[in-house]
Image 1: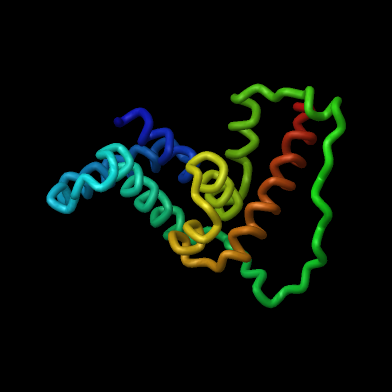
Image 2: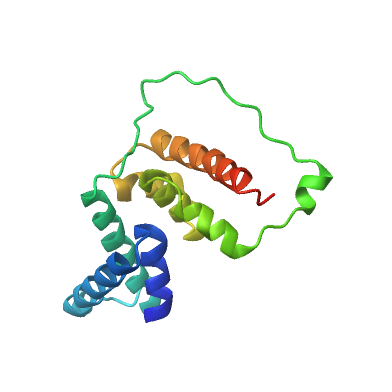
Length: 156
């Protein structure tokens, strides 16, 4: 499990040494909590939840910049439509990964949880202690910033 769990830590913390530390702490926590494992989910899913929570708590300690948007008025944006040419463009995984690493903590964590870990905005809001609308806003802003970073690096 260590490689997969390390990758989760790395995606959330965005720092190799911190990811190692967080993973170590998560494994220690999991060992201490083994008696709470009830088998409702697979062991891997149970461990993954501990690793994600530990990683998120670590990032929160660094004071990730989550911007509350509850009291802001945003006009609804029409959904983006992509031309056939845009759909044909494929980016290399390493290039996208590097671009994700350049995102601010708040954007990167929400984007990672939503796209890569499969959390919905309600779950993200509960885990991060933010509102669903803030999660959605951070996700949309993260996508826009990610696209901007990719374009700046002439990746598309």
